[in-house]
Length: 95
Image (tube, rainbow, N blue to C red; front, top):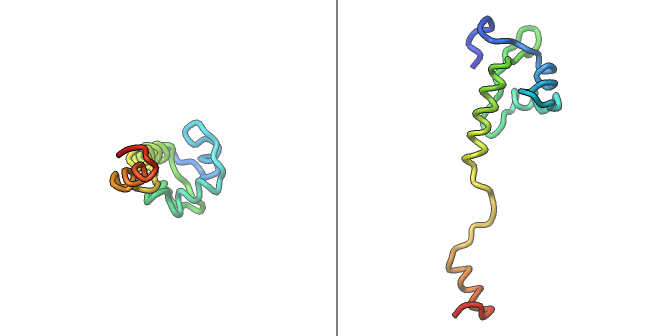
């Protein structure tokens, strides 16, 4: 969380979209990261007449997002070994 606006480098959401740690993101994406978040993780922001985030908050968000993405198991059908074996037997591949 942005603890103190004096300790972090505040930037507008527009500036954050133009340089999101070296990449350009659409402004609606940055706004969604603040308002809705990404898999339960929100980009920290403060409102002082308009919304601001900080370069430090963006770095924290990216690091946490990488942790979430690396720990997520890809979604797909889960099939038991017995089901696979039955199908292979049916087609005469195994006995």
